[in-house]
Image (tube, rainbow, N blue to C red; front, side, top):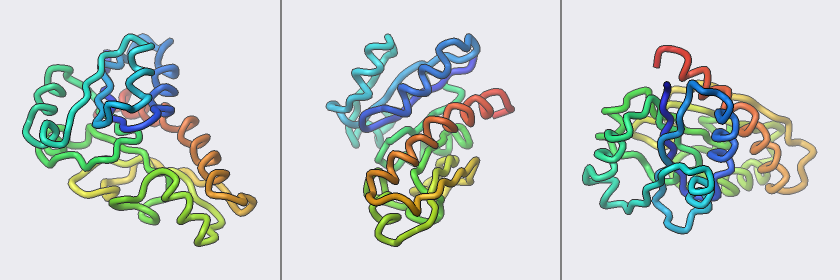
Length: 189
């Protein structure tokens, strides 16, 4: 059985979507949800699904406490789904090409530190982009610079607000993120 560990900081819509996607598939276990935000709604969603969670601070992330917790769970894949902190190099190296992230834009555009959520969509809107999308990529030592796994675009010329762009992008996330995770888990990661 393949094991997925999530890192998330917010509402957890992608985490919840992925949990539901794999619920009927007996080959995947969700082994935990880790969050740096004790108020994150994703923690409640994990609890409702009987999935263990861990809340940690920046010191615990960087001094090996979180790495030890990861090691105990033995994940085959670590999925960042709205996790806003940079992963420490020690974790990135130990789980090389086993940590993935989803970014709500077509990288390399609109990526990097501070570019997340509505900030990304607002920048897309203000720059009058005809299209945007999602990028699923491996995590390395730098924000949004890991090797791309998958990109999908959507036309946003008809969008009148950044929130409308966000809705279109979230629909892509919910459609494709679980599928790409399944593909990675069934390949030789």
